[in-house]
Length: 102
Image (cartoon, rainbow, N blue to C red; front, side):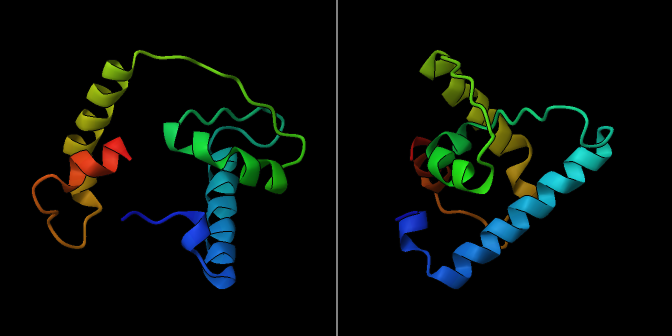
């Protein structure tokens, strides 16, 4: 099974919130400061809208529909090109596909 916010205890959830906020601050600084509107387009954040609104009450969301086959192909490419740098252990067969599908 995969981690969800429902599975997190309060301390882990707060740790994620702080790390995510820190990441956003770094991105904001890198691209010219807070006067520019940030656009986050990672599909994983679709499931976090409630949490993001709690963290950023003035946030706005844009719904973009993409062909699910194209999304899967893009996610597979990202996993193959980038995720290898992030693993602590080599994933078992099918784990990447399961991760993408979930």
